[in-house]
Image 1: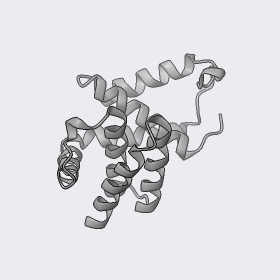
Image 2: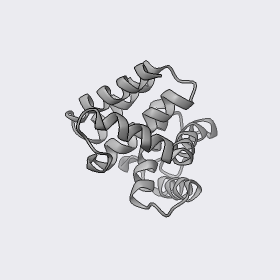
Image 3: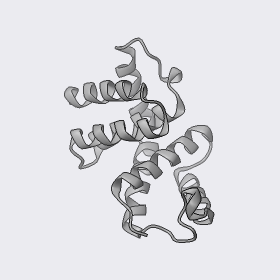
Length: 149
């Protein structure tokens, strides 16, 4: 299956949403469960129809999940500070927005991804999985984070 980094980021966000909804699960459990379910989806349902993505693409997604979950306390503290500047609270965010922002903060701060790329990807992904109103929130928070580094 030929996929892009964008798709891998989308999968990472889906895994991070699952982790957020199942806080007792480890990164390994979330990742394994996601790929097991993914492999059983038919192609018309958005799955691989039994075909898994290339190992390189899977690693790209898994690296984001493990990175975020491995640094969750630090990322959430950073995110809470950024949100407080706008009068928001971490618990007030929707699950998708929280997952996208966590992934964006990890990519900007810990991965070798240019801030502009990470921000644009996050905006597009939150627009796809949430509402167009979430775009400005994600853009503002990640832009402030990137400028503060």
